[in-house]
Image (tube, rainbow, N blue to C red; front, side):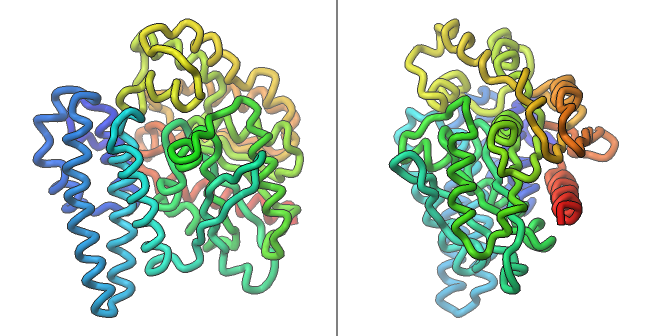
Length: 389
């Protein structure tokens, strides 16, 4: 992995994710160069420095985008709004949920993303999914194929700390659209806007919110309801297989990073084994799952986390199932990818794809070479939908 900040895994992950989601080397370097010293203080201590640096870059791009719009240069403005969304959502991801900057920063991300849709991605729209008396916020990318009739669709779901804005800037929806597939980028409970602004926390029985997404998709005339798939990255590698195992309307499933036994990963992290995805880690996971407690007393949480696993679950998957994992994933051991694959004995088409250091995309969910994994997943999904007819 390209390591701009030697020794600071969390910040490096943010940098490569940004670069592999359309960030420009010069802009990222200008944001990061002034905080190299702060990076040496550790992933938690320098979080505010990280936010200030990336906010300054965002401010610059917003000013340029507004000037471009005023001049009638819509394409230029769209590119600027898109990159500004990318930069600011990566900075927001680093903040503690207790930070007074977190909600205002996230609200600004939402506003900037909306400006990007209007100027950069007119086929992407904000939608609301009815769910247990409230709604789940999402972005829907209608593939050009929908101009001619119903098209298949992928429900793309978050991991522990990502948002639908990360999905949007990853451009995975665009790869799907080019293959005739729409995409619902969902902030499910415990992630993104659903958590930050609505207080909806994660749940083990992911089929509840996944089923709500299918219910909504089935109401749309532009959706081929026989070909709805679910793809989840990082902790989504638990969420999506669990959903596909119990929500039988899904036609395929992808674990983009195998999270077969999340509880075991938490026990490793408690012993400082393996890397962690965000600063203020334990505070973050307690917030995501809505668990009261102190990050210094984790016994009850670790007992709960043991229930977040796919033992006895992936055997229930009866649709095509892809497991994509990096050989050098420093967060989730490769053995979990083999475990999910090996146990998916009732899938009619199961595949394990391990990305190697020689080809890249070998880190967590392939963030070190994200487009490489993205197109592989998109091709697999397109091929599988075609086989399903």
